[in-house]
Image (cartoon, rainbow, N blue to C red; front, side, top):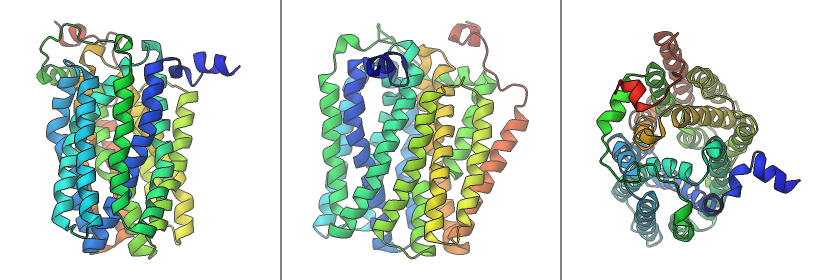
Length: 417
């Protein structure tokens, strides 16, 4: 019965050995990533006690996505993804170790955080589209949708434990150990990549021919459904996908809580995120830009409701709903982007997708931080939800009647080549 479930059910991607190696190793890597996120936000508050500075750090870490994710996508469509991911994980491990050492030695200053956040952003901006594309090479074509859902389960299960572990460590030892934990966690990912069977990794561009980002841009321009999708992704990436920033300002400036309480809020979001991820593995609905827009509007509603919570405990109870809607929206958008395009151009499209989704934080995070300082945290959080709903609704009416993907997704048919 278990074997049958693995081969044909919601866990079917596990029949591929390389995917199993990646899944369990990346769980530890993702735990480290979440532990560092919590520690980084808390460190900034310790050094500055300024929500605007939180936004600046988040913006600096996201800015490289604007200019480098498309480049990473181009690399993904041409070179060995496995080798590139190993090198980029090594660099991210180094940056985390440096910041952890600075904190433990008592020498950390806000400008150190600026620099390390930017360097981590550079590594992640190039690595993210490569990893997104690489995961589709670890499974057979019929399992790609399932692997996307399982990746989200992985990411958000780690999100459940990472913030809580970081909160405990910060309370007991300060923020330094959380950075070192993240640095060590990359070792597991690198080891898994080194152990993978090369012959079982499919090749998108076996001849390693030159590829061009311009071709991906022309492909998107010729597809109104993709243009609408990217606009919605930019909208929720800018104003809605800021859970740690929202929780940090609400926990410290509204409810006057400590690092452990802040970490618990991250785990509350993760409970909902895991639920949304598991649901997505059970019901692998057809990718659709229309459904992404609908989910994004509900996401905005959840943000507004959370901003009205009168107590810390009610806020914590609302966050699982926020997390579930956030993940269902994210998976729906990612599936639409991954499965609604020609596989030969997937790396470059994912580079643009990540550039748009993460690049929005550059504008959104400082804006939310500024509104927090001048108008209050509740107003900042609710404004994020309002802008998310307004932006998504605008996109829907702007592209109404053109939100469906064409029957033929090939580059030739789309560009008339």
